[in-house]
Amino acid sequence: MPEPTSRDMTTIDLKTIDLKTIDLTISGLQQHYRNGDFTPAQLLQQLRSANAAYNQTNPVWIHLLSEAELESYLVNLAGKTVDDLPLYGIPFAIKDNIDLAGVPTTAACPDFTYTPQENAFVVQLLLQAGAIPLGKTNLDQFATGLVGVRSPAPWGPCHNALNPDYLSGGSSSGSGVTVARGLVSFSLGTDTAGSGRVPASLNNIVGLKPSKGLFSTRGLVPACRSLDCITVFALTVEDANTVFDVAAQFDGEDPFSRPNPYENGKRYFSAETSGPTIGVPAASQLNFFGNAEAQALFAAGLKQLEAIGATLVELDFEPFASAARLLYEGPWVAERYLATQPLIERSPESMLPVIQTIIGGGSKPSALDAFRAQYQLQAYGQQARQELAKVDAVVIPTNGTIYTVQEVLDNPIQLNSNLGYYTNFMNLLDCSAVAVPSGFYGNGVGFGITLFHSALQDKRLLSLAAALQQSTALPLGATAIPLRPARSLKPAPATINVVVCGAHLDGLPLNWQLTERGATLLEATHSAPCYKLYALAGGPPYRPGMVRVDSGGVAIPVEVWQVPMQHFGSFVAEIPAPLGIGKVQLQDGRWESGFICEPYGLAGAEDITALQGWRAYLQQAVPK
Image (tube, rainbow, N blue to C red):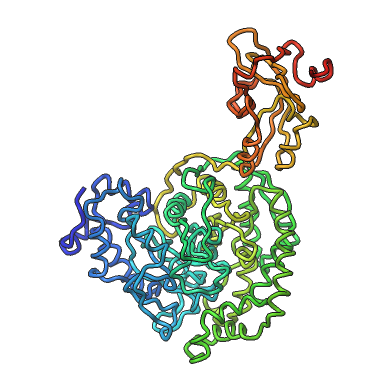
């Protein structure tokens, strides 16, 4: 594969790359590079020209990198190939409240501008993985808004990628539109109140809002620092998952960073489902703001989920909706004031009037207000967790309606608030979420649904969203790029099945070790007919040992219990020798984790195989 050099940027035949025909997804570009169809330098020159042209009519960029600025990133790829770096030569965009070293950060406010000397932590990870930034994208000023029109001159409002009369969504407006138009492969946005999901829905792309803290926010201009998330926009769920695997790294210098557990890590992702149970808000709690078309599109989205094997159940959405109201009606707006305090107190006119109004209100809440709201939020969180415990995921409309750019300019606060009905609670309640395309309005604007659950369920949600995207097979963004089959590893496990044959059976002395860990009984069944059962010496508690044999074995009565993954280790640690956990074959041929016995433990044991199970033995004999 040709190595990128400085000469590549100036000696390329632009006609050799037709952006309308290449696959700009991450996996698509990787294949183009392997085929030698073009080099990263050749692609970037073409993309830069296309972005500059598009920016003339839709101001998605605040700073588009020059060829000279791009050069250093290309040089960093020298000697590497697509097989060396997971994001080799992948072009991406950065919302302009996230730092890129040497490039001004504005947060869409000229008087706020500064030039960082270091990359944001997440940006640095992406660069090390081989990704190449094309520039910094437009946004609602100080990431305050869900509409994409709150950007002042010299930039101005962004427009929808599918219908320019309509909102792009915000605040990550430019980041959403550039992905939808096929001008970058993925982009970084942010999400405090929905800014990583609303643009995804309106522009027919995927929006991943990771669990708080999984993406470091070091190098991000804060909105509400305790709630902020850096997010990913992508054409496919698989691409979002690829970026997640690179960016979800613990940052010891970010006080809000949290480590990603193994079961939510890079080994787990699958576009296959196994009959998930998905919660749906009660019909009386859904709000489409008079938009019957949106209501019909959501109903169609529910049928799409049923088509991939999901069981839909009604849940109470009120604790989520109540928490959502706290974000702007409660004291959290004080965090926005704190983030911009020097500017708003020195020169409030530097902000757009609507931003002044919203952030200016943050000087009013008192400490009493803050604690009162925390108590309310704690109550809503308790109620929400009880609802989430009933399901594998919850599905909601990403936004309940759509508006034109002019409608929002005429009524900026109320219509923006409407767009947050299904989004504002997410970070307050520490949820993870994926916004995925579901359909289109008659005017061409995208309609999407959001799948969410509690924190650190990102991989389960990504897997479910990938299965849905594969099933619906909608066009990707505003492009003609076909959807490829998703790469599958394996589903992220939430539980482990454990076969028990003795003292852990339902109602017996050690069953509490399962039930107190939240384990549930799946079935009473039998082992394959190739085991013997022994009453081991010692006790109480009295315990059997089940041993697989080549001959003379029978089918032993057993139970299969489903143990939560997070408690499996402590359960195994309490199992004394000579017992342990291995693989046990059941009568239907399945192999499950279960109790086995080391052969040395049979010394002094009584063969009770003929009694057909431990319960039968307890009824017929008094252990000695």
